[in-house]
Length: 269
Image 1 (tube, one colour):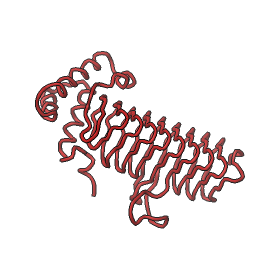
Image 2 (image 1 turned 90 degrees about the horizontal axis):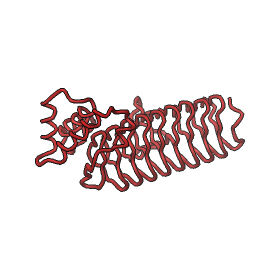
Image 3 (image 1 turned 180 degrees about the vertical axis):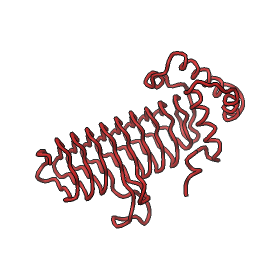
């Protein structure tokens, strides 16, 4: 047990606290929670039941992590799933993250992510790694954010949306259908793909040739006349695409199978 626990903190007897953990004043760690080594929980933080946190995480003042999802009829006695958080994440002030609504499932946050002030992450979402979500962005339930996504402030995301890896969404974007990887999007209803995310290409470690192919694919899909989905299918038929281009094409084709362009909707109960 760490010696850095403030005397006003409330730690459930069944919670597991790792070594070198700091827990600030008036913070609550609920039944069955696991807090990994070298984690810092600031003042007035709430860690809900059965939240599993890895090592080196930092949760700042007022964050509420793992309380019941915002679903009509749910209360503290309703059976629900868990919340798994990986390593080296930073959850800033007043972030809220909800566990899965299903008893045997989890909301998942990977490694090395930054959720800024007032971010909300709904139930049954999956965040991969190295994701940045800026102030007051709201992510509805059942969404998936892939590796390296960067969301600016006040972005709103509909349920069941997939945000492709290494893409960027500008501030105030309203996203209601899947976003391909490596692009910049902005606007709302409809959101539009504006450009290639050059910074995302660099962060992803793409070779110069792969980056050129992404730009060629972008121009072919979004800068020609005709339906975007049809142009994506035409590229797919050519075959032998560079992996990042194949990823873009796959997202567009998968989304095209659902009437609102949200691939994950195909798997909802």
